[in-house]
Image (tube, rainbow, N blue to C red; front, side):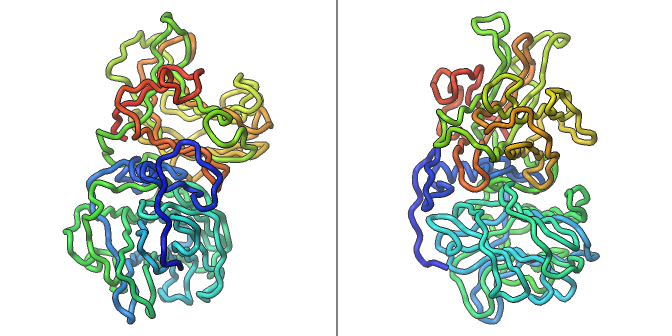
Amino acid sequence: MKLTKIAAATKFTAVALSAALMFGCGSSSSSSNDNNNGGDTGGDGGGNGGTTPVPGNSVALTDTSTDNAGKLMYTLGSAQEEGSVSVKVRYSAEEVETAYVTLHADTVTSADQIASIKMDSGFSSGSNIGFKRATSASSSEDEALTQTFPEDTWATITISWDQTNYTLSVNGTEAGTWPVINANAVSAVEMKIGNNSNTTTHTFYVDDLAIYSDKAATMEVINENFDTQTVGNEAVNIDGFTEKTNEAVISDKYNGTEGSTGGGNGDTGGGTGNADNLAAQILDTNIGGTKEDTGELRIKLADQTHVTELAAGQISATIQIQPDADTTVDESSSKNDALISLYSSGTSSANLHGDIIFSGNKIKYRDDSGAQQTIDGLSYTDGQAIKFVAKWTENDYSFSIDGGTTFKGPFASRDLTPVTVITFKLGNSSTMSSYEFNVDDIIISDGTTEAYNENFEAFTEGYDLVAGGDIDQNSAEATVQKVAL
């Protein structure tokens, strides 16, 4: 672990490939990571997408004793052979101790750990927090991981497990799947800072703990955001948190800056959001006007990032589809579909590498023949804050609406060449839409290194992204608006 830190850089949209600033944690980048859908434990968004400030408490963990570590431990009522946990964490720039998220069996000791993820500034370069995973019950046997997140920002850690393997996701980006250390059922989940031999004067924050009894995160065991707890109280006094909880106190230090940089469980997102949050808003109202086109926000990698194409990659964003209060059209002829499209060698339907369609509360994908296929059992509601993640390889693509906890696919791609353009579209060119398609905290990466990161907080309300030249000029009716995501 290192004792010095590198100062944060300034806001970026296209991110240079720099080892020292792999995730560009500058002032606006930090805004991106602190200004997305806050308040939900299920569905905090994907990728490294930012978070919307919302009121709320968290738990402050400290380690001031050489007899114990700072711990927040929740004991399950019955051991779970499979399940999922999502938790938000915040690791300070001054912290010098290692933080942990660990799944335990019934003895709740290091010897019975099923999975243990470690976070430390010393595991990464620059102003980022890196990860390692325990490969055995011995604390000296760890494997370094490539995922990072910026210091002093909220990050969502998600672990799903069964008695064979566990999977880690960081801010909606899957880090990997590995064999469990012990093939036992999980009895407790522990968040920890430090250890019995060291102390730290700094604080590790934990929030929005959600545990589920299934890997798909549909059967909730606990969902605790600590907002109803009294500031200053010990977390050990909260039902379900074991007596092993130590130096864990309810804090309001980050009241107004909660929310994670992505990830999380649940397919409905959550939280009430922040009415002053800025996002891109797409409309489709200009049929018969000066420009007949689909409402669209288009990102051309060659023009807006440091790469021209991505043979494999990922995009995450927080999206919302809902009626627009200021738009009135003939509903009998309106088209309110919202699409997120990955294009390869061109931008016609034949060049689609992947296509996800949100239509009338149903979610569809486009197969390699160009036909739309409805996914049974997958839906959304008007106004829902959806933590969208899509990832692709040379031959296929898959997507998630719960921040990367569960994915649908892979689906075979139609155009097998690298992705060059990504679009968010509303309606079509022959009809108008009475809806708005809101998009925020867009992050595009190769799965490890960011190529694009935009949270729209640097713009003013009403700013025309197309006229201002901030997005590809084939875009249409895309402006910056206040959206309570």
